[in-house]
Image (cartoon, rainbow, N blue to C red):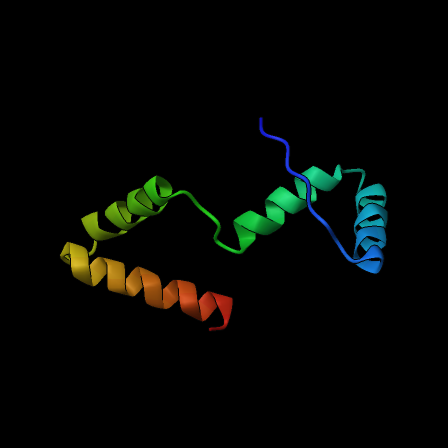
Length: 78
């Protein structure tokens, strides 16, 4: 596992610490969950997801990628 140093606003850091304590979790687990919820994935993972979606959809690779990008943007609110 890799370590990462992040600089946070003091108020946000305090809120994160309180949330972790309240939920009985580590700060790291909350950060990891947040990144996954935002769709942060490796390129290989993203390609696997597109391949799975495409296999049952009848779309070609470009069409499947386009749909995946549209959904990602929609979910991220962009």
